Image (cartoon, rainbow, N blue to C red; front, side, top):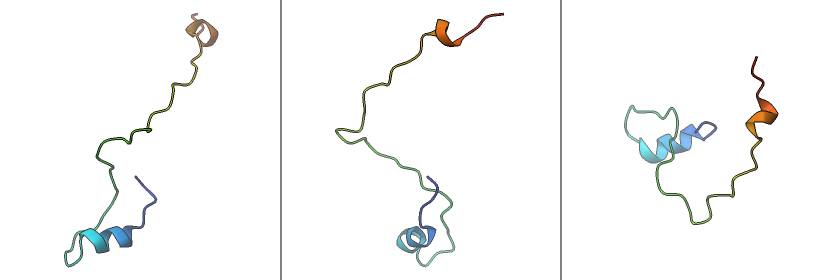
Length: 51
């Protein structure tokens, strides 16, 4: 995940070391309501042309 505050992450997890963060990866289980219904899909015959 980009766009995080590197200084805050480095201070929390890497204080007193020479390590620095580059990116953050979310690892864990999704919340109870994390999934949404799937959006409608176009039919292949509407979007594919075979030549």
